Image (cartoon, rainbow, N blue to C red):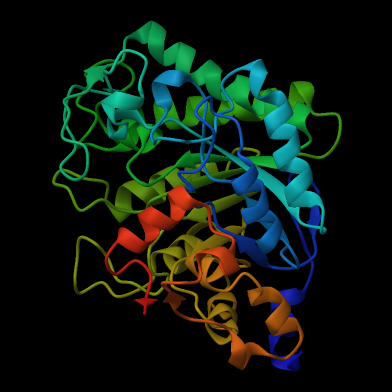
Length: 375
């Protein structure tokens, strides 16, 4: 291994759980569209993770829905019933088999859920406001009782993750899904205790966080980490601003969380709301709360040189996603000094070689510009 990349392979200890990982490299959570119809993990998904698990410090699963009303994709994995336990246990063991820590991402789709995957065909959200992008279905506003049930569902999913042998959970508060919807002034127009100013819009995200943390304290008999993923800005007007987000992360930093995961398509990208603001969002977060809670960055990290540059900003954890789709041996090639052999395109005929499930393959090759697909 080229010695300059050694910082990527330094161990890291999470401050709350005390869990130590072998290095700073994380497989980012990516939807597979390839689970079984009942929410269990498919054989194809297991093979997909096995192909990519060597050498990473942490592997995060695709988002698992915490209740049927929260399913957000066809063929998505679930953590919503006790019947999921054998499936979740199998997943945890697969991710851990080559030394990585296994994190289950837990989630509710909210207004972004397509009606045809929901039991009653009706998406729900903080308010009856349709999304600007993606789903155009008008959601139904959750009742007070339903909000309480949803919060508890995140706790129940966490308890299942503990019992299944995962090393932690990541609360998915990003990418326009339900938790973000409650924080968003676009999606949340409530006038009760769950909506209003930025402090009130934090109520639901914080309640979910506290429920998860309390569940870990009550049921985990060995170290178990909790992370929180969020999108720092929204393009909608009204929408989440960096000012809003800094208030959120400052509050989250007071909770017993192990890390904050800043969800961006490009780590180095500028503001979604202000073209003159070029500073990477994760760097702003790191400067704000990095002394209190570890920050994880993600987005357009193609080479080990780029991963190292991310680490040099002060962000201590580097998540890579699309790169592991194109190059499952990314970590090993860096370790073996073969970084010049890392694949940076997705050949159309490489599905079998790369062990990408059929459902995932169809989606990623159909998303123009998301991956450099070549003939």
